[in-house]
Image (cartoon, rainbow over all chains, first blue to last red):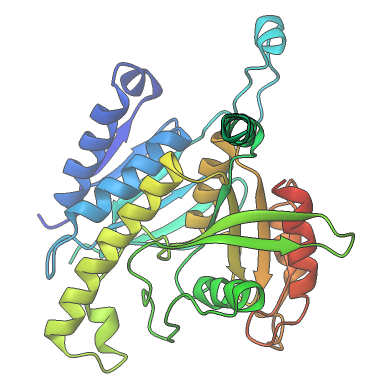
Length: 120
Length: 213
């Protein structure tokens, strides 16, 4: 059967991984042609590292990068301690990542992402 | 007498080193073909009389981060800043050498260009993590500002607590919409400019002097 594998990674599973493990898992999957859907998005530092590592793995006539789309981050109301410490970070949300030659984003809104996946 | 002069020079050097404000490195970031090098050239030309990089319609013409040191920009009220300008390669998540073939580049050169471009993007991300003190984020105001790479990059810049000015470039084109960029990034100052013909570039200089001090 021809098709495309889609891995939906839960927030709990992501919480057990270090930043580098997450990025390695995403890139290994995407390079194999898998579409990865993360229940919780990457932190900005992880996004920065993902871009950098993606660039280092691009090859002519091979892997040519990733397509990534996510919902806008949501501001969480910080708890008392976080307010005191001035630590409040936006909550990252569902993120879709796939090989650039297979995944095309059609439309993105604040609460809907439409994507087209090629199986060829 | 000479001991007195030497002592005075030493004290003066110490005080200069102690009180001198660190020169900021301002990175020009944005997607490919937004006009980053055109802006870098305009800034360096206006304030030093020299150009900085080569501009072309082919994406990823800039494939290495280029730095021009000691540029002093003076605002209309007389206050000034001295900065280094870092022109960076356009940030993207994908590069395919075949894209360059459409611009008449032969396959061999296109593969080299793609490889250099990937290295350049990685280098630009590294600069942002390690060596940049402020950012001019350059957007083409005829394009959709909600592209994921823009959302990600602005988020990365914010997470590093770097001051950022968004330049809404290409306002000389009929379908430019700087307002769309303002609504995409309401949390940051947006300056509509045309780096090609220089329209509003004085406003950008004013904003740089006040924002990057």
